[in-house]
Length: 375
Ligand code: PLP
Picture 1 (cartoon, rainbow, N blue to C red):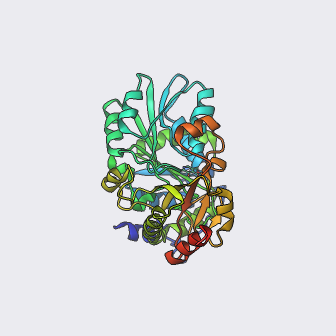
Picture 2 (tube, rainbow, N blue to C red):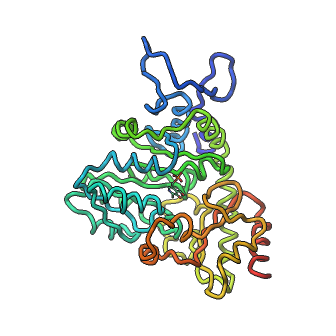
Picture 3 (cartoon, rainbow, N blue to C red):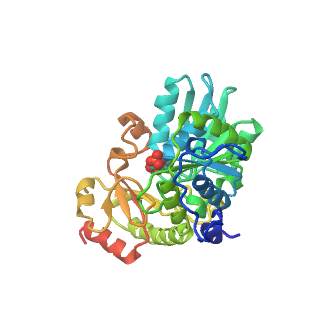
């Protein structure tokens, strides 16, 4: 099946009782177990609503199995913890999402897991590997600088040394990129973003081979962080329109990025779809669309907060990937947990703004930006 068809049909639980076309909501947290093939329990990640969504996502990402969590960070935590122990070494891109960065540099480092933070470049990843490296954590494009890394190359480097690769695919969504097809072992999503798509739910996803999912599930069953049946229902409904939404968002984003690139009060636009963006060529090779996330650096004479307050349609809000266009200052939001020195090293300045382009008419978005620029 093509992705558009999988979005609608894959994984739907057949409602034998009354023939409803949607997966019924199984609200139970207690299930009979005698003479049943499997003991179902929400924290075992195996209830019917959890499994229906996982099957749909596996079809979209081309992966064997997966687990659904209550947040992207719960998913990332379980994925990484399943691959490390005290004394292990992790290679992590310096420009990954702030929460993932803090998980590695603060939480895991405190538990005796050594982490090397490297530039978004496969050669830098390779040179940071040590005899203790058990996993490599990447994100592409990254939040919020949209750095792109050659996922196929990272996967090859890791495979040669039996190191597990974990890729956060939140920004691209499975519509624009499938890291598993490039050789990545574990794909993680903040499902709160494009997968949910309406800024009204929180969840996370881990997808991998059946063998790896067994390892991750063993950790996750003790950590918890499972998601409830109602959220699964909302997510399954949202995924039916994922391809439609992301295609429109991606188209809008290209127009918005080109508009921003022509503004004299903007110093730099980070968007993989711009031909002069450093990651453009690799993005062309490994993505089917450039996505709908971008960031831009305002000139020093423009006050970033005043610019945000002048916007009328585009809302300054935390999070991304929804049908509505949102904007935020990463230094105060997604990367607030990092130290000022870490932000400076990565290149997240106070005048950097991140834009998540929605499904509105692109003319209205550009008109709102133009009036906020004072035109
Ligand atoms: N990964 C990326 C790229 C993100 O942008 C986020 C959140 O913004 C996360 C992971 C964490 O997801 P959640 O907020 O659902 O825990």
